[in-house]
Amino acid sequence: MVRCMRKTHVINCCLVLLCLLWPLSLGAAAEGAWQTVETQHALVRYQNPQDLERFDKKIDYEPGRSGLKWIFGNKQDGNTADRATRKVDAIYARAQEILEMHKKSPRKVRINLYADQNQLHAAYQKIYRKKTRLRAWYIFEYNTIYLNVRDLHEGILAHELAHSIIDNYLTTRPPHATAEILARYVDKHLIF
Image 1: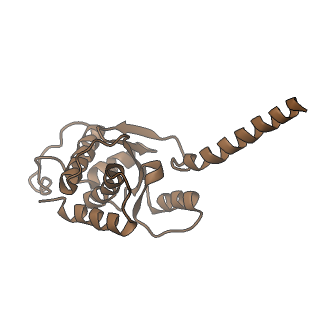
Image 2: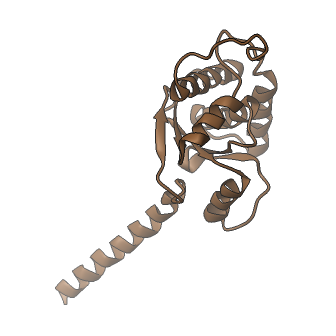
Image 3: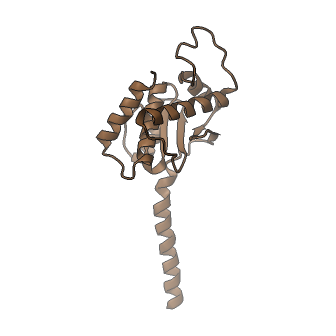
């Protein structure tokens, strides 16, 4: 009888753990093998090199350079991963500066890059079991940003990074409407 109760207890504990951990696995889409570029503040995740290249081209922001760098034909230094790393960290630092929230986050934010709107919306459907029209979003529980590289600019990235900064800076997360106002403020004031 005691042995049977122990087996049942072990099985019940395993089932509880499985139920608790399964939703966390939804934070990382399982469509394909993810590759990662690690920055000072983030883990940029993508499924094919073209997604990282498109991300790099869409984000026109680097420290010490204006958004007009393409007009004057400035050479881009480094490879795609290096440029993406610099851009993400520069936008993260600028968002912290705008928010005046300079505390180091206890964990790096994940940035999941999706090739198009269909893949992005499929990820949302998998997590929330409903459809969406969102262009991008952030989930605190996964500390993950979800982006479509075909519909992206530095303001969208700054907005979503602001959500991560805000949620990880404050001891109590603000109401959604308050966080949204702050994130929009960062998007609007990213470029001086």
